[in-house]
Image 1 (cartoon, rainbow, N blue to C red):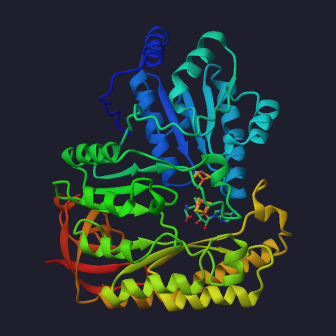
Image 2 (tube, rainbow, N blue to C red):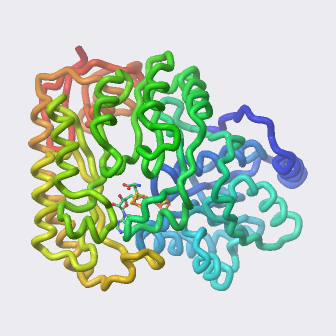
Image 3 (cartoon, rainbow, N blue to C red):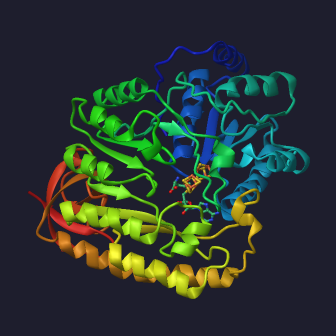
Length: 459
Ligand code: SAM
Ligand code: SF4
Ligand code: F3S
């Protein structure tokens, strides 16, 4: 990874740590940061990197070369949790070889007191723990570890504050995520996020727009607005989209995630009328069965969901939808699972992200008997994915002969001279082209559909 300079005035604690680092190391110390979980966590890691870069750290992909290891964790499912503890075991060996290595665990998992207690008791080589709020205190924490040789294990809960001081370190100059809000108020019965990320807080419109302007001026081509439920953005989401769309420049706008209970015709109309907004909606449905949706506390029915899809497709038959699905929710019968399969066929998603239900302690669903066995959940997941493979393959065929706008970002997989990128519709498109086209918008005529992507030629 490259060391990018960050244009912000360092805080007093950053200055203090920067000086200590100059006195301690004969070269810039290296940090390895490993991020689990969603786009929000990736964005938080960019802020942590911004702070560390301001203190003099450079970044490395290799943990064995690091002076500081940061694990930014996710708590959404049990397997994410297990992987963190697995990785910590590996880093223990590195710490034995390099006594002054600093290990830090942060993020959603460590916003839970029981996890902090476990690390305190059983992972004594972890030096720093903080949750989802403490990033700006990190220079102070590292300073304390370096000068006092003590551990710093903290849970902060500044739930209502949004810090605009932390500048993000972005290694990708072309595609950037911009958080517009933090936290979640929805309390879907299975989900830990509201407990570890707190209640919804929205950034000011001016702060979001200024950040987007700056990114576009610096050459950014794709902005993804982030929030757990962007439709409940505190100052009006469609109005924010209009303001961002009005910013001068050659760029496109995406956003994640929308909640079906708050996404209606107004949102679809905005997407279709604003030229920079991609004609794609990630709209997590979770289940196609009304009883399960009720138990999940989602506040919509399968028909409500289909009404949104039908409205969008009545205006633009190529409108693309992706979704999240949970299989094996407590008490889910095979018939109820089949309602989800039916919904997949009806909507014709371009892609789905599907998960087996994972019990999270503290949530409402954790009080229900988790009565679908792991084996059964695995079978349901496979059945769902097999079904979706056919649907994706079929959906992609409609684009043959059409011209799509693609932002190629890397070399393709299907041929020597191929480039690969996503269309406005969020579909992977490969085509022959010189590397000079990478990171520019290209009009591509689709000549063939494959089961996972489209093949085209530059117009
Ligand atoms: N706020 C977004 C939303 O409502 O769609 C994203 C939330 S979460 C970070 C991403 C996905 O993880 C959810 O849409 C859901 O499908 C899945 N998920 C959340 N909790 C889960 C659990 N306990 N077990 C399995 N999957 C879960
Ligand atoms: Fe979790 Fe529901 Fe909030 Fe999404 S909307 S983060 S699934 S509680
Ligand atoms: Fe994201 Fe995982 Fe936290 S999905 S919000 S990193 S629990």
